Length: 235
Image (cartoon, rainbow, N blue to C red; front, side, top):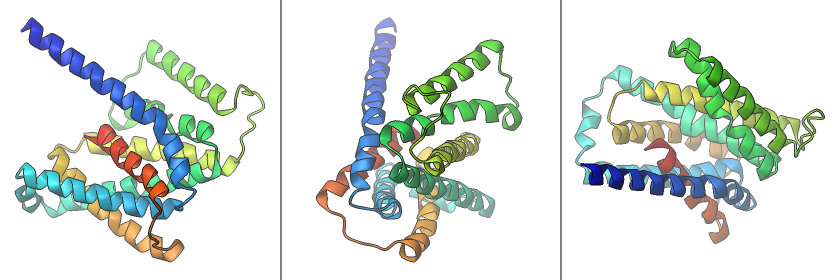
């Protein structure tokens, strides 16, 4: 039992290291891809790949039958979650990345754990102690220091609109995370539905406000990183 516990702990450390590597490089990958695709086009192609992968997982795990068991209310819930993520969250986030340097956009977006902790008080009825409040304040100050490159009192951002979008993306993700954690359906099945509903919004928005073009190979690098990030974050 002890050896099994140690093996699981080592596996957890390995996953943690992989997650850190993905998170640390995703901002650069996004910026590279946004040189070749606009934010809607990038989301369009990433969503297609995500849906295909999820469908393959459903087939290999014999979970497609679960889709027929869900009620209309559960499908409506998936539509809401799909609107929040991948549609609204990534539209706002990618637009922020297109306006801000990666070193500003990423820390601002990563305030979502702070937002989750704050929203969990009214939405999940959780209590936060003094230590948690102190950690939130320290984390927020750290984000400000990194985002402003040390000019905390000046708050000199390259794009105030981009800052607003990056912070908004954190709030959107926090809302999605709280709604998703309260959904007790199978993870793969509900994600497949969420991405399908989200893609419907993307499918309408992309031709209207952008256009569908064939991406260059370099632009696909960020696409693959985005898909990898989704699985690390959502699964």
